[in-house]
Image 1 (cartoon, one colour):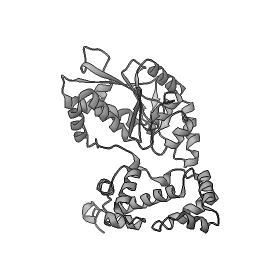
Image 2: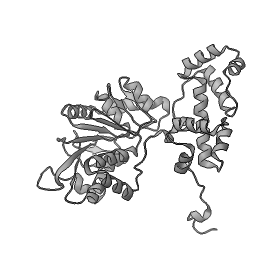
Image 3: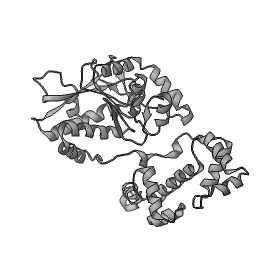
Image 4: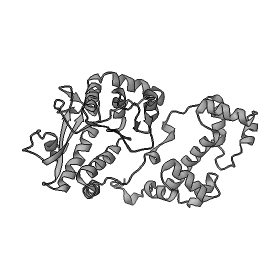
Amino acid sequence: MTEATRRTAEEPDDPATGPAAGALRVGVLAYPGCFASEVFGVPDLLTMAAHVAGPDAPGYRVSIVSPRRRVTASGGAVLDVRPLREVDVLVVPGFEPAPAPATARATDIGARLAGLAPETAAIRASAAAGTAVVSLCVGAFLLADAGLLDGRRATTSWLYAGELARRCPEADVRPEHLVVTDRGVTTTAAFSAMYDFALDLIRRHSGAPVARTTARIALVDDVRSSQSPYVDPRLLPQPGGEFSERVMRRLDQNLAARYELGALAEAFRVSPRTLLRRFAEETGRSPLAHLQASRVRRARHLLEATDRTVAAVAAAVGYQDPGTFAALFARHTGHRPSAYRAAFRRAAPSDADLDLGPRT
């Protein structure tokens, strides 16, 4: 934690000291296993914003709070916490998930939440008192356990969005969104989306110019609108059975081929209607939807790693009309192909770009 943040985090709730009158009181709820960087990431950016705004502007009074006397965060970091107190905004960081395969994530999350009953009660009480509650990344699971997401729109890390929807079926989970606010409850996407939330908070409390300058100083992107471009489908659990897996394999091996439902059904010796029904029963979507997602995934790789034109990339994944391809690509990623390449292009470093040390 920076010294500037330490001073802000330890600021007493005395109107005669610290930030100017009208300071926004922000509490960060620390708990065992929470991400230490998410505990301090938002306060650090708020501290920077306070410096940008100047000493006479309403600033931020931040406290690291907990219903426990001692908290050890991820990586064994011991946090200095204060008792729960009245705040304007309560921020709930995410926790460190176990490096488990997709099939075991639900068990791991359930086990972690089972030991956080005091935090869940604190979140519920804060919301009932009218406090704005914010979760970062998988902190959304604590809000779900507290009952705050029922009937609300929400988001979380794209990697865990499906599990959140399963655990909290009354929530309207929007996995593509970076920040979602619904009636006083805010949820954010994966890890770095804490900065998208913090910038939005700064924008509302200190004004757009302060938020913009803070983003520039911190080298934080303040124009992101979706986490869709970052999704790696290979890390998500893949629904399906033996039949749908064979169909998907055939589609993936022929990405550039024209999609013809009749020919596909004939290859598997079933009627088109039966193919659609069985595929939907096993995967929850259509063969065409799977093919489009696979084409976009391949196109993303080509845009990131090659110099092919957008038209050539479109043709490589089965689209002769670049406009049709661009519209599909934007629907899946939130970016037009050229904009996606500009944001995510991977340039292979040369020896001259690296400090390789003396050669032997």
